[in-house]
Image (tube, rainbow, N blue to C red; front, side, top):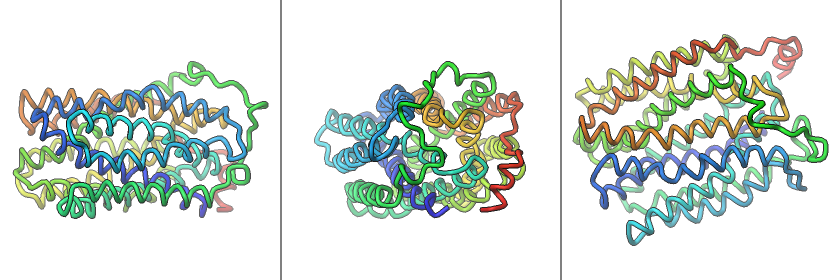
Amino acid sequence: MKKTWLLGFGFFSISITWSLYNAFVPFFLDTYLQRASLIGFMMTIDNYFALFLQPWIGNLSDKTNTRFGRRMPYLMFGMPLAALFVMLIPFHTSFITLVLFMMLMNLAMSVYRSPTIALMPDITPDSRRTKANGIINFMGGIGGILAFGLGSILYNANPSFPFLAAAVITLISLFIVVRSIKEKRDVIIPVSAEKQPRIKLRGELDRTTVLLLAAIFFWFVSYQGVEALFTLYGKHYMGLSEKDSAFSLTFFSLFFVIFAIPSGWLGNRYGKRRIIMTGVIGLILIFAAIPLAESLLLLRMLLALGGMCWAFININSYPFVVSIGSESSIGTRTGLYYLVSSLAAVASPPLLGLIIDQFGYGSLFIYASAGMLLALILILLVKHDGKSATVSEQQAQTNM
């Protein structure tokens, strides 16, 4: 598991960059647009690149064969570019340069996001992947806490400071991952490009996978909408300062971190589907209650509970998708996972922005509850429990 912790720095850099982007870029856009629907749209236009690139790059990385491995070349190329463009965002001089830097940053991140995540199952036996996913998401959650907590302090001092910090962290994380993970040495089942079977996307879309991906889409519709527009909700609906609004998300991230590793253990012990359903039901109730919260304390308590429930869902969903496919299709299934999450990121904020323009910011969490309800219906139709039960897997867990 030492390699998993070190690999977690890759996910740490992704999480801290995305969290800063979603927390503070809406404030830059608000200067030019002043409408939630337009801000929501601009927060997703960059995801059109991710929508098309991530499944293709995930599939391409399955077939890549270099002296650095299958996944590592994508990290070595994409992470320095992402660091450059995230650093440039606060130094935009117009609406056009702001959008340009946003798109270039997200384009660069699309190059290495799927390969980074696919490295985890590459170096981890199937029976340990849910626990390993808990570890890398724990690292990601730490990134979220730093982004919303320390990032809000840095932003208050100077709006460029959080983005400069994210760029430095991305480069340091790349150095750690490249030095500590040697693909040719660490992968469980090395697969050469010549011997690797050809993976077709259509062949991976069985009924169970389609239902699971549809459920993932709808819980990300809820999550992406809330993440993209929550800071404006706090500012315009609850009357919070920009700093307090962004800092409130720290409670969500903190409890996500606390429950990240336990969620992986629970998924292995009781089945991923059961734990995911627990989290979905919990978020339906929490999101429905947040519009009734009149105090900052109650809002943050509900966000804390929401972070716990999101850990139940998010920690178990990616290993669930990978577990119902073959070892040779890990990159492809990673791409499919990020395809549906990117679709949600594209569709949700502008749709939510239109609803907010029509009904006000109080409708944000009603919308989020509805998305979670649709996800619950779909996950109920999935028959696979996501539970590893073979003798060899149980022995592997015993020998950890």
